[in-house]
Every structure is written in C-alpha cells, then in structure tokens.
Length: 278
Ligand SMILES: [Mg+2]
Image (cartoon, rainbow, N blue to C red):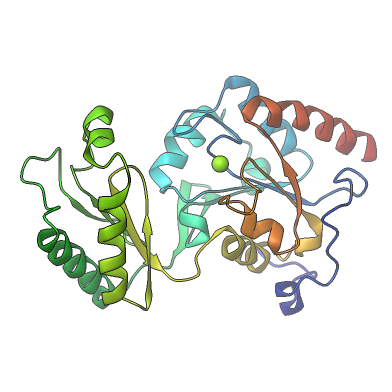
C-alpha cells in the first residue's frame, strides 16, 4: 500500500495535540488496545462492539494493537466479526505482540505480512538462561500443566507451572511476586541485550528491547503512510504505569476509556461525527 502522505518525517511527531478534543479534526485512522478496551481481558468482542467496528471501517482505517499473540486476535476479534467486504477488510490492520507482527486481510484470508522474530541465537540464550536460573533458584517445577518454556517466535515465555495451569495453582505459586522477580533479575543480568519482563502470575517473558505500543504505532505509520497526527488511539491504560502510555508519550491523540462499554459509547459518538463530516 502506498500513499502520497508517506514520509520518513512522520517518525518524529511535529504537530502533537494531546489535549485537543479528538472530534475537532477527523482522524484517518483509529487504533485500539484490545484487552479492557474492545473486550474484557482474554474474552471475545461483544456483538455490539463488533457492529460498531464494522461501521467505523466505513469511515476510517482501524488498527488493533496488543501485546498478545495472533491466536488471541483470532478468537477475540476476527471470529466475532461478520464477513467483511474486500474494501472494508483492507482497512483493518492487526498488530499482535505490539507490532512486531503485522497481519492484513487478503483475498485468501488473513496473512502475516511480517514478523520480527528473535534470532536463533537470541532464542537459545534466552531459553538457556531461563532454565539454568530457574533450576538454581529452585523454581524449576517437576509437576506442571504443559511445557514450562514456550517459543512464541517474537517472545520466549517461562511459565513456572506450564501454559495450561489452573488459575488457583498459579495464584498460590508466587503470591508476593518475589519468585518471579528473583528469576527476572537473574536472567536479565545474563541477557542484557534483551528485554526480560515479569508477565502473568507465574510467567517471565523475553523479547527484543524497546518493543511497546509506541513502537507498533510507528510501524503503522510506515505501513499505511498515515502520519501520527492523523491517528487517534483508544486505550484503558494511558496512565504513566499503563501499557498504553508509550502511545500518549509519543504525542498521538488519545482517548482513555474505562472498559469496552465505555469504548462502545464513545464510538457511537465518533461514528456520528464522522458521518456528519462526510
Ligand atoms: Mg488494555
């Protein structure tokens, strides 16, 4: 996809208007966080939200960007949408794992346009450091629900009790977060060129450094040719500790929501404004 607006200068936002009413100038693209913005965490879109997203696609490009894997996008978003017309489908952009992957609709369905995966060397060093340090700290469990280490291509994940462990077992494993922190710190010291983060209740994730939603939004500028100033981002965690905050810090116009119903109410207003403007 090429557009005349494509410019390297878009990587540095020069016209940032974070305080401006998002409705005062029409965005060309609206990007959404997924969990607790479009749907409850790890849950499918409500039919009301799916209808609103399809209506929104009549007016603007739409992106969903989340730290989660494509499989979650499929069950939470794609499977809940009706069959899109080709001209609607091409306006929908999916960015799993904060934009290190990009998926787009083609005539044959959804296809991965690119994925910036960890190299074989990075994967080996990450998995070796996780196993060695977990064993040293006495955190390598023998009774688990599925594998402890998982290669997600752009991310290596350690789950102390396995991927399929029940919630109560996971909660009981590290109620204070101390065990995860000890493992995180020990592993981070061994792979200083990679990002090592505490993930869910029993997990530690390793990715490339500097991958967050701001990274994904800049990738989106490259892909669509739409400058950041013509984008609007909607998310539930725009506070400085939140995972949506890097987008706000980048200077993108943002609208904060309290949950998917709040987003749905906001979209009804936005779609009305966009209809009136066209
Ligand atoms: Mg969220």
